[in-house]
Length: 489
Image (cartoon, rainbow, N blue to C red; front, side, top):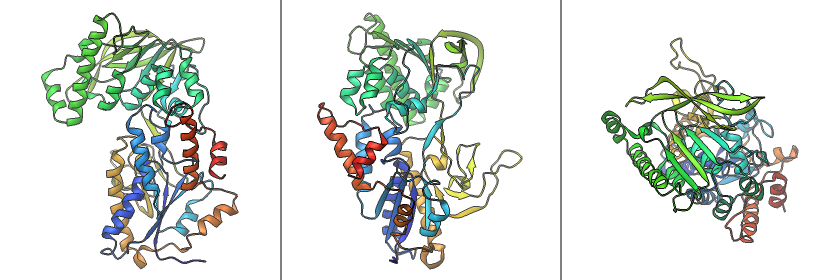
């Protein structure tokens, strides 16, 4: 057995939250470690249940986001660090238990993402033709265990949601297949699916007003440049009162979003005036309606299938409070997609806060607690902290915030981890088994063959070579068995 004196940290999840946290931990340790009595040496083992890293960046965001390549490249540079060891294709709770990790690591950090949709909760939500965004995203992103085919027979579709995921889903449903293939790494089955998509009319329903939407400016600019698509808006939605304009102006990102939405309003007017054209002035064969202050109340069905959606007009005050008007309208649609939020994954052996949809942690500081408790008045009650266990990203705070939010999250959690480690016996080195090869022997004894960083690079090289054959930068491999064969070759 080889004893080492470095701190040993296990991170569960190799998406942005896990990778950023690993990088920040090493940086902060080098900066503060001596002063905290911890030294500056650490080994971080990063466990990922999928055969490849990057989580949300690879599998949770639409493939046509221009920033994705940049983020993936930055994450890859972080993983190419001798102090970070990648263990893909290793599932926490199945291939390795919490007790086994605590025996071998001084701290365990959960950076697990979200794989399920929040339920729609409307009458008709169980009809054939109602889909959660998460599964659709898995399909068009080539998730290893996701669907390989998607029913795109509906000519009229509705998308429910006022955030970036709703925008992603709507955009992909309106996409031209050849344009998408040229710009992205989509696999062949997604290209064929999008090419056969029959959708010609799309309605995006946002419950609140123009100033309360949660779109990023980047999402809006991507919506503006859809070949063959005419954008259609209701001008009344843009009749904002002075209080709302003043409130929106207080936040820079909100102000920029509202300004971009007004740009879209002008574009939509021009598209109509020019004879129902797209952004380039070409005849549009698809129509994309954007409805603000519109709350779906029922999915309408016949013979078990979606035939329409019933929507109530709402009013939104300057402070974002929504009220019902009692005015209803029905739209004929044959499919409904809901993007009203994700539910972050649970973790075996860790308490889950159902009310806030994240792993139970103390006052949002990332320290895992024994339970998620609420007082009689609904306020959070003090609960016991579990030593050496932490959460970051969506696992800590729930499904809110952009990818960049995980960096500030990571710094907070790392600061708490270092503080706790400095107070622990023997400078935080509390794991009983300090042999860095112990985890490898454990996994090997179970027949688990992790994919390391070198294995990921083999998969990536193959994807780039396949893409090059078609004049593309990249083309995703989606079969997990093929990924394993490539990685272990």
